[in-house]
Length: 72
Picture 1 (cartoon, rainbow, N blue to C red):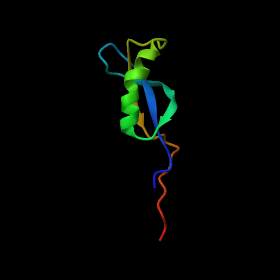
Picture 2: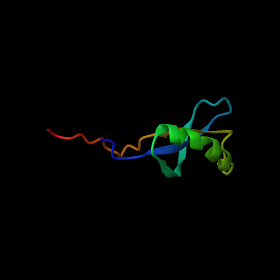
Picture 3: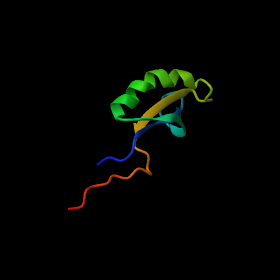
């Protein structure tokens, strides 16, 4: 059973869109990767305050989230 949520990680990238590094995360969680991906269209334009030529995002499960399984 999945016990966590999906987060949107913000990435600052070079002009060519490569050489990206993590620069933050959106302070929200999403029930699925599809919901997170849909929110990118709203969230990315709001990130003009980040001083990078290109801002990108990636949806992922936070490392602290664990997947639990029922023991039988």
